[in-house]
Amino acid sequence: MKKEKGFAVLLKKNDNLLEFKINPKIYTLNAIYKTAYFFLDKVYIFLDGDPKKEIKVTMKSKSGMGELEKVASEFYNELLNQLLREKVSYTNAKVREFIVAKALYNAVPNEVDELLKEVEEEDWQEDPLGIAKTWEEQQAEKGEKSKKSKKSRPSLTPSLKLRSTKKLRPMKKKGKK
Image 1 (cartoon, rainbow, N blue to C red):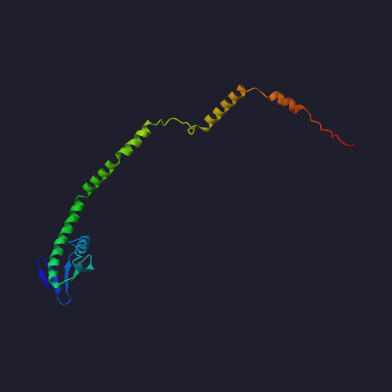
Image 2 (cartoon, rainbow, N blue to C red; image 1 turned 180 degrees about the vertical axis):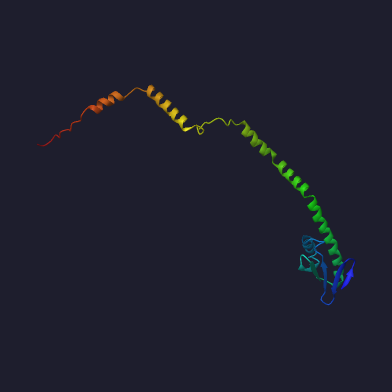
């Protein structure tokens, strides 16, 4: 195993592999995943180990052995970059959420304001369909309408009484005796 500027590197030349370990107490697992994804076009990457103790990264070259050490150094630089991005993102989360919320709110204020104006202009106390009336009020109105209608038309009751008091006799059949 060979040590290079703070990180351990195990170089296997015959298998064209480079292995090194990362301390997950220093680097988050999310940052390790993002960094590994960043290097997928250059090398094959295999992650192994216990996420609480130690992450083992194995790189296999897609082209040649000479570039593996350079890629491992770039991997650590990118790992620091991803870690810093996470910390900045965490620090600025509230500001970012506020900016997005403000932008979304300002995107549609005209529609909301127009709806509020319509509601304010409407006379909400009008009841053209009579929905807000109680049963008693409705019955009182029906009684007033029936009294008005009785007064306005002539009474047909006496003639009906006469007709109903007459007894009807059965008609005799005309014809053969």
